[in-house]
Image (cartoon, rainbow, N blue to C red; front, side, top):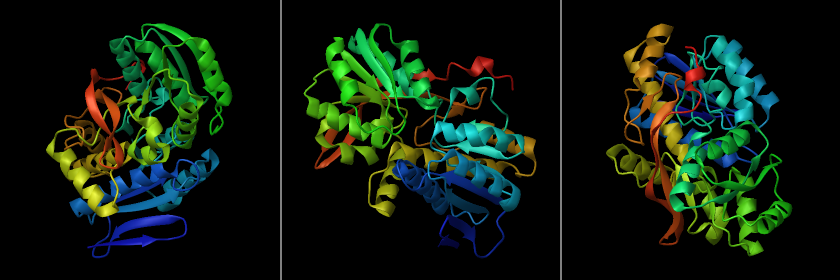
Length: 376
């Protein structure tokens, strides 16, 4: 039997009948802008642990408030005082870059349920770092590939000026074969996009690709719909995910977005996950919830195969990825990032709920562009 205790700054999932054998530190965003993403990762992770009945895992969760300095302080505390074996949870790439290199170099395993900056996939790869979601460029690469399939030839592209935003535009351009009507980096956390929309209107673009996660995407889509600009929009799942669509509303209907997961993926693990998540939390799961769920199940598979104190054996158990993923087939490439299909989804209305349905495959068995630079 587990005991779930919520303190002012931490949530601990621990056994009451036996000492935990593996201690996991989760630093994620639970307040302020983007909190919904961290909450979904947390809830998916906790659901997997509860379903597995793991009394051998202790989970300590802290709120990074989306601030790199806070994330670093929490990581130091977890590693030096809490003595965690494994860390996870970070949503934002700038926080990942502040925390992960130091953590893995201190012998801690890091399992990323979201952020996948290019620096950690290439020359900055590390044997203790595993990304269970994607490399940042992947969904954007798929958007570029889908734009080609759709026949777009003159895209206007924009993203916030931080590591994931830079990876986003780089990824789109890697596969997109047309011309660029414009390319903009916006401010991280920006909420007013009147100037950018005016530039799109004047650009002559036949399509718009944007990456604006969380509240940034909500603001952009609402303002874009109100502007009367009819240029088609394509983007990654981050701005069309379940937790965001309710806030965006009808402005998102019909927009195509790219994702390695969707609630309608037809495999038994995913079907059971969607049903159980909705039953427990009274909401449909998001992309982030699926990633938290998969991350926990990867961890469980490694614990079942090796002792965490035997780092090489535990590392090999993680590499094997011997678990049932919500995505179906799952494997790691040589830089510990997934090799996976990436789908095109359309925003639709199911009853009175906005959601996504798969309409095609944008990329098959896609790894990432940086694996060759990884010297593990």
